[in-house]
Length: 189
Figure 1 (tube, rainbow, N blue to C red):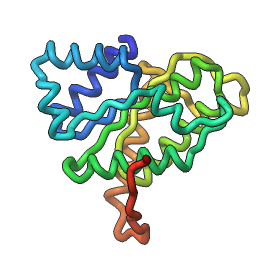
Figure 2: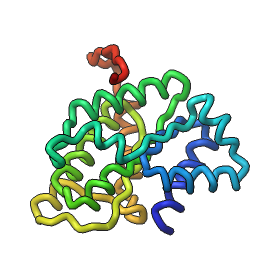
Figure 3: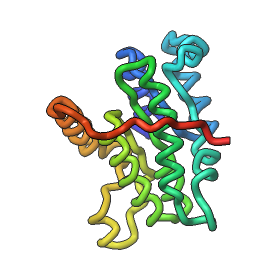
């Protein structure tokens, strides 16, 4: 199963189970996903209008958070993504984020930022209680040190993600009270 087939499977599963789905991919992939959903009798305009699915362009999204063509502004990324997730949680109990930015960074040869981004996305997912699927290009991480820091996932090597989802759900269920304040977010200008 290739990346787009696996992404389609994840999107369909999320929509069928009344989850909000945030898909961060290129325009070409977005078109393939919407065509596949239409073929499977999903009314794309309806799910978009009720906010159940949101598409963000991976390249444009990334360009807002990278400076000097290589350094990732993780705080701005976290703030923007958190805002999008918080809005989705207003209408849906569960949110699934499908990320293609790590793949984009790997294809550009920016392994350090890809590892950092993957770590940040997992941290945000645990903090905010959403599921995340990160697909990769299959490019090997350059050094053993970077490889030990992170497990850049391919679409077929997704068993780690299932474990993280289970762990996140378990932590969420075990939490008795939270001292974390929900801060108000304003959309970026």
